[in-house]
Length: 196
Image 1: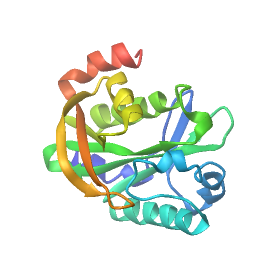
Image 2: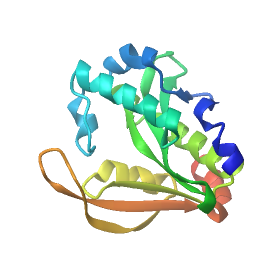
Image 3: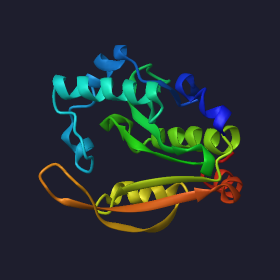
Image 4: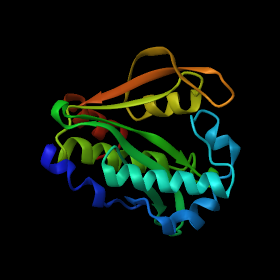
């Protein structure tokens, strides 16, 4: 996994539905068309509400990707060629052969139509099959019922709640709930949840 990690910065993944590639400055106009929807950011620690916060989002994503703390992908809808959202690999631990998939969001028109499942299929497949991960984890706000339902829907197992995990905008202390899929579970999950 150590060797495979070094090529993550230039990774491109695609299937019939989406193409995932490294976030870039040129993505700003595409993100601007979908990112200012406040419903996206309800359960996020940071928000994108205007041009300045969009600049911060894109520039931080580029910095994180270049320094390897997080690999931030722009999601391209292959039917339209438009930016559909973003997702990341983070908390990457090559020695432990694990990483987190998260920081995921989609524009409103890309929700509920299979886009998220297509994204997760690519990210999970690459994590287990190419990187050799033993564990892929996910976390979300315990109040985010849509994300929790989605994680169960892709075959992730609920592990537990970390109480008072972090501070949200507005000062609320968020309880974070963790989910995971293990390498031994991946073949069955792929066959049952991703039809592959």
